Structure formats: C-alpha cells, structure tokens
Image 1 (cartoon, rainbow, N blue to C red):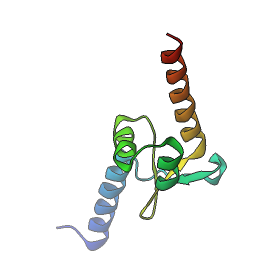
Image 2 (cartoon, helix red, strand yellow):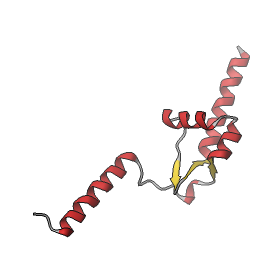
Image 3 (cartoon, helix red, strand yellow):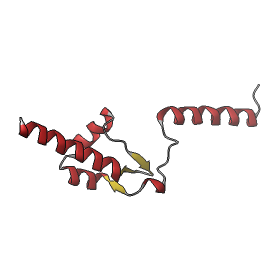
Image 4 (tube, helix red, strand yellow):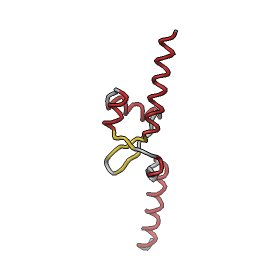
Length: 94
C-alpha cells in the first residue's frame, strides 16, 4: 500500500511530466523583450482572433500563457509581419 508521501511524489511526477509534454512549464522571460496582447497582435496584423488562433495551431506564431492571458513576443510578431509584407511584394512584382 502507498503511503501519503509516496502518493504525493508520484502525482507530482506525473503532473510535471504532462506539463513538460504540453510545454506548460515554459515561462516567457523578461529578457525576450516586449510582449503584445492578443488584441494588439490582431490590430497590428489586421487579422481576426480566429485567424490568430489558426496561426497558433499551425505553429506560425507562438503564444505564452501568463495566467489567463495570451502574450506574444513582439519580435515574433514583427517577423511574421515582415514575412507577410515580403509575400505581398513578391506577388505584386510578378
């Protein structure tokens, strides 16, 4: 039979493993620079929340959870914006 401390240790290990697999242990650091909210990203890229959600699922942009808020690294959003501008320029020049 498991003792209470053994059970606590096993449950803690399982929770840590599940969090690690889902990337929930990663915290955005302050060293990464500025952070944007979902609303700011959508306004900057002229997209809807649904499009942003789809881009997250496609792996195009990465969100960081801070409590209940989704935050996005400004450098990632700038890179996405720059790639979108390049695509438009290429299609216009053809």
